[in-house]
Picture 1: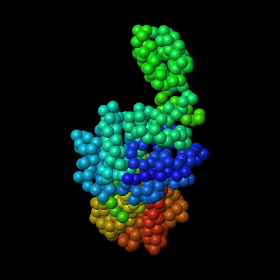
Picture 2: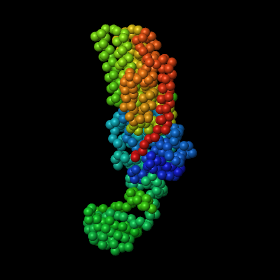
Picture 3: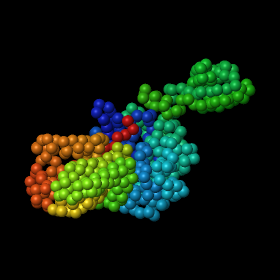
Picture 4: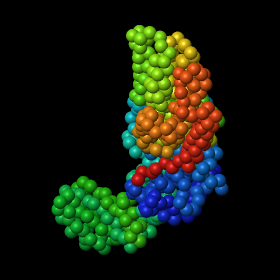
Length: 303
Length: 239
């Protein structure tokens, strides 16, 4: 069981502040590090992984500094975002090299390759791998020494849905085993499926910490927005606006559909299908246009 | 101090790249020229010394040093794959010394060995010319590798800077300004070659003790500094 402590950490590059006075603790289980592109997620992960020194503040793993301390890598595994690997090696050679650098050998490498289900392509050159295959081999190289802390920067980029599910299962299992798993993402669905605990970074600041849905629900002063497309938008709009759970409806003439602002979340979600059925209106699209990460971010930033 | 896995990755990266073609081309060129000179001119000690000094030591050794020295680490830092070495419980100084050893070995194999063969082709090692330049190439391999490995850790333009140093500083300024010669790996190496032949065939601008001190100082200094740079190497983020 390991805990990463980030204590009043700031990092700037010249005049640009990438990370601004962030304090957080990442403990056992799966944590999602969320934020729009350019929010400072990679900078923060690089500091957690000891690849970048904080301009101020400190990053420690169970009391040990991470920066300029090679011994922490016995307990940290890193899956970098960048694609570059040793392309001239085969997948197996690459993972074996990573195992050897951890003082381990071919047996551990083979087990890691099996964990990510890459044995079938392990003797092909990495240069021939797809993005998802590369991602899995990177994952194997990070798992080879069974680290207690796993840091993953945008691990689902470029993976197809099946690979994504597999990796999510794996990370879930690792979290359940009591390992500290931190992954960054800018995609809401990934985080919703994998991590209940999230840390939100917006413009270099620590905007929120905790359960994502709870954070959203707490912002009750904000109406929930839905995009609804149906067989008869105007009839549906007239029926919905009659109920107090709906505060406003806009007809989107350009894209088609209704933009609905619901003030009573629970009541609206029951009302919509009932009204549609009663009037014989077919619902074609119902999407919460609002519970997307971007809008949560914008609320958090505005708050 | 030495990690066999780092060494394996380094030499495979060095020899697996397109740049590695130069490692084979230059020595081949030297051997072809040597054979042609011998056939057209016969064995001549002075010609042998001029060719080995002018082409092998002045051009080939530094060029191969640039390829091997910068290539041992530069591309990994550029594309970020060095993260797989840095995220391991391996001392950064071990990574640097291992890469230096590989760079030295590659430079020696591709520059000193062909120099020796060319020397034998040219005049059958008459007056010890072949051995003298081979010793010079071996010594220069060490210093160039250390220097260009450091360059690879500090600059993204290591190859260009290395080429400018090797070709402009060593070759051009070295022949125009005598002061520049004192600060030239080539001249230090020549000081050793001069000692081996001893017959005025090889001339160095630098006295042997000075040359030895400078060679050792540059090699150790560059290696230490490269290790320090790697310890605090920052990997840029997404921005």
